[in-house]
Image (cartoon, rainbow, N blue to C red; front, side, top):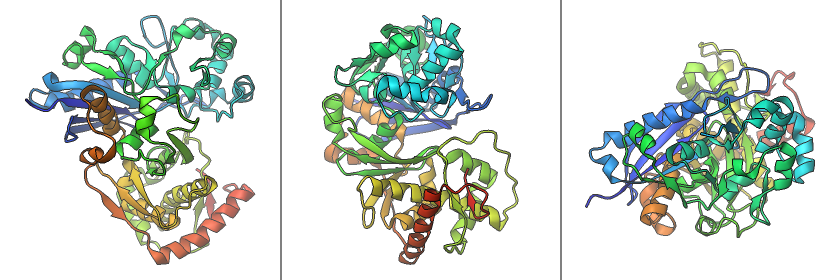
Length: 472
């Protein structure tokens, strides 16, 4: 018999991806589609949930639909997505408006109250401050809300009628009591919603539900295919990169660049997601939203600017970037002339991820020098970017071209529905080729001086009024 197939979907901020793989780990087909973020006003970052469904339909057609006998062989579907993103919907799951992305900052005015109510050190991107904003500014829509979704929760519900989320992602909402393993009714009472509008809490890899007839017909798939409860985008990307053992580190080059340290074995976590420490199974020690700034700066010239940046002679006084951690809004279109200043600006943007990564690792007690980390995400395809970051960290990297969140989602679906080996030695069959990057000793010495200067600028809170310092 032909090997069963599993499908992984990764609904990213700027790109939606799909990986179709055999349960043995062999990738059969892949596809991707661009995603669009709307900025209709100050502090707003939105997406239309129907675009998520349209992307899912197209990705299924391009992967499963392109394989002879693919639909009949499909054993399971796994989905991951960006989070914490808030979508509110009515009784039948129809959205009541656009989704508020994690980078939407309308809830910032309610952050202090959210922290007081929850007793948590919230960052501002969570669901709780967004719901507090809705309770104040849009109580009519909140009163009609019968479902609170994230992107993958919405797709799971559209596919199966089920409403489920894993505990690790739910805790990023600011609404979960991890001791009692339940949603916090005291917070829901303040907001003015009932517990029934929230998803049930279920372990990653559990079967959320099965394809309903209407959804199966729309996708050209058999009725009853299992859809598993997935994980958020970061842990799924870690799974897809094989960063699942304690002490492993992932450098993620995405719209949001992150550094994620595995704090406990993923295999233990998926078996019991409530049994471990609050940071389990990973700790995000650094992040910066560099993707929009890079796209604005480079325009259509990204590859050419990469090459130009790699040839630049840099010294301790060259341009620096101090990321402000928020997605750029309303930035003007960049020109297309490859001026040296643009190459220097581009290089400084790439380098800033290395600085942010090093600072975060050191603050977490992880010494990067001499280590080898795993690189993943769309930006990791840039050899220039990986080389700059390795020089800053004085650490090697292994880039896995086949690795991304959609592969991690497929792996989890394979583990849940077919017993596929995704932990231990068995995961190697899924991960594919490995491309090494090593630091250049001469560049390491330069980047050491530049890192110390960057730390000083960050401590001083320097703003972009200095000609050699920018803040996207």
